[in-house]
Length: 199
Image (tube, rainbow, N blue to C red; front, top):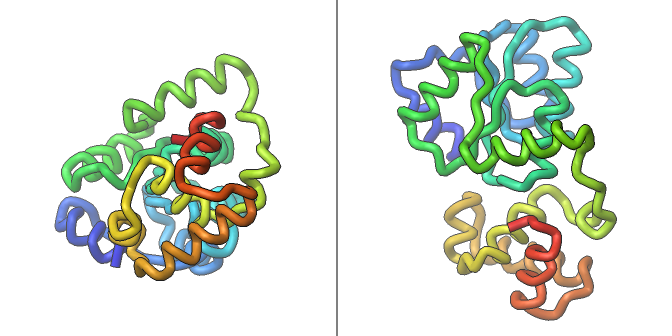
């Protein structure tokens, strides 16, 4: 659903040569089609966007990568940029803005949503990536997405709409997050996420 929505937003402004729903099919599509720009989901099933970049780069394909994600966490942004992406925008971007971002990456520019540019500049100025958080590592990519939205105050229904999943699935993920982090409420989760600058 999300991919078809993006495709509709792009319209005729961009020539979409392939789509993929996991790392293996994405790598195969990039190697086969040799696109100018790869619009990449950071949390793509099968290993994530970083794995796609690593595999494609190791085989010498010349594609430029633009990450598109629901996550605006520093850890995700820095990880995919260190892997070699030329830009990172969040899924709140409008269709015309996304078309413009793809064009700029195709031309060799780097493109970031304004708030994310600060993460990248700070991390590279310091010469280090954000520290690894053992608690955060216990969560799956989807659990992290749900956790961040819940911690920001989204209702279950809003999270479900944002991530294109059912309310019941959101409830399941929230229960798993609270259990893994040993927290007992949304209030504690918000404080936990705020302490780690994940909001």
